[in-house]
Length: 146
Image (cartoon, rainbow, N blue to C red; front, side, top):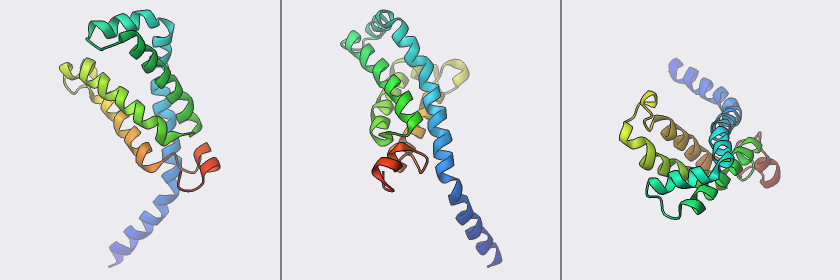
């Protein structure tokens, strides 16, 4: 019984780190989207051509949508604003990236596999289901259940 009580106390104390871990995870994921977003915006025509070469329909529109969504994701995840809302479109971008670019290379990130996009997708799913945490504009604007 002593072991169970110790574990329950540890679990209770661990709850204090939940919002801090969500903050750090949001910042890490936002940072991860920064460079791809800036790369797309720096040469959107090449991105559209690349999308077209992979058979993505309406490549120019989709290049602008992907670049805009990633850039918005950087800002919104950093601020913890509309976190649940932006996580959905970013998950879709990760699914498309996995299917069109990474899947043929297998799992390993070292071989350009789908490992990293999968991790991003999992973090985004956590944000979608758990929200941004206490250290966010979502909490400030929308309250506890944001």
